Length: 316
Image 1 (cartoon, rainbow, N blue to C red):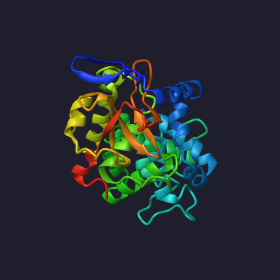
Image 2: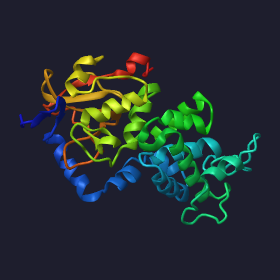
Image 3: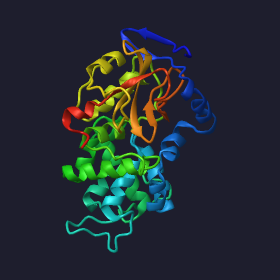
């Protein structure tokens, strides 16, 4: 068994990992993709590319940069629900909202400036560039910045819990590597995944709990992801594993499950969030950023999985 290097500093358990099955993929990713390209390209599914007009896809990816930590997939999902990416025949709602992102003119004015590159001057909610950038700013102002309260931000866009759930479901479909392989997560699991996706590119910081510390370590990321879904879990990887609920040994993980690695079930040194299709989102080690990686569940270091979302019926 390849040695798994681990340290514990200040009571925070996380890993300087050397997982044999993940190392080659990690090096290849570092050579070919920047954190921005990981967030904007690697997580785009075939479904996203076939469903979203290329100009709008690029615009969602660019517009999301208005709000640190906002995934472009959330903007794209809102555009899908509101007007099918501008394909609606009139783009006028019964409430008077207009344009591809369905703004009331009075609301649009509050988020229209500064005029983004390529936008209209004066800005207008009918222009896709202006509308997408304004939508990102609105989400940011209401909780999407650094993923602090993504559900609240989406609810402020349209005051409906069903709307929030629909947007998050579509956002996950747009990001999934292959939506036909794994069942879509629901409820807290979906929210946790959306939060974690929004952190891709954020620096690894040992003991980090988020932007206030400059980034995340492995268990800081997973704790924050489930906190965004309203589910408290312990801070340290070993404690998260012990808290469960655990999957039976050999069970296939589902999107939203936490995967654990270490020398034994009593020496857990790394945790990651499973997103389906054999992929995880993780904060791997110092000198890296939050990223999507292979799950490595056939590695000797893999010790099992837990399903925090089960506490709230997150998988059906």
